[in-house]
Amino acid sequence: MRNAHLYGELERTYHELAELDRMKSEFIAIASHELRSPLALVIGYTQMLRDRNEGQTREYAQRALEGATKITQIVDDLTKLRQNDIQRPELKRETVAIDGLVRQVIERLNDDAAQRAHTVTLQTPGDELIVAVERDKFLLMVGNLLSNAITFTPPNGNIHVRLTVWRHAELMRSVQAAAINPSLRRLDTIHSGEWAIVEVYDTGIGIPREHQSRIFERFYQVAHSLTRTHGGVGLGLALVAESIMHHQGLVWMEANTPQGSCFRLAIPLPAAATGL
Image 1: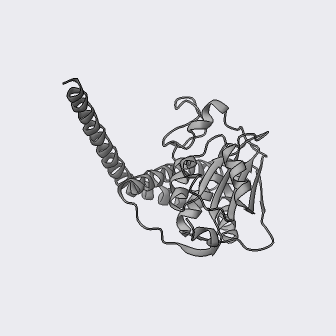
Image 2: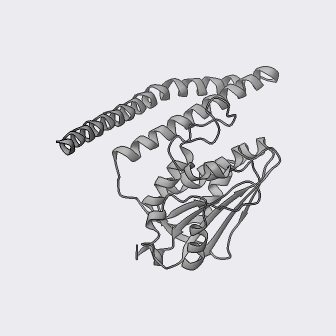
Image 3: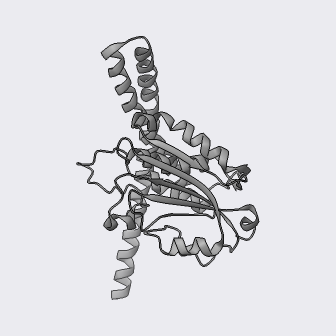
């Protein structure tokens, strides 16, 4: 009787959680849809106002535009989150050189880095790194890592992006020593071939050790939501983790970075990908 009662309680709890998840998904869908049209109007008219004025009026319009753009980015993240929940489509992989894609991400974020007087450098190997990825998802992953580095690095900081190739043993040493890696449960199944590594290192404020185990969770933020100063809703790293796992890859944070933060993204090279 007791087991039957416990089973009934567990079943009720499961249905309540399922209903909460449905309501969350529905809220995200409605909020995203309803915010997009007015945001597009705000951004359009604010750009027009900025471009037609000078002095303080132009400066105020630019600040308003930056605020509206941040809201748009949040809406985009919420939309991607819902898409991940309601569908798991096959990746539309392309065989591409990731060097060019990483440069594209850096160019997109050049203005953000310049506003904070950051120096962004890129180091690549002599040969192109060819991988099979879904282009938009790869741009999203690298873009989120680089955007975080820009946001959480004080003005006049340095951000270094490095592309390299690691063998299996080097990958395992780094991942096993990592502060946190959301793909740890897959380590015993990954292929022993070579991997393309995208490393994003910054000289920013870093992440306290007590928070490092949760940084890839959805909506988790290191600072208290009422006192933090950097914005966002805590979805950037969660989206990176979910996207890289769809690519049979890995993402982790370097545990012993002397200053700032270092994140590494690993994607199997084509020869290795066939064995996954």
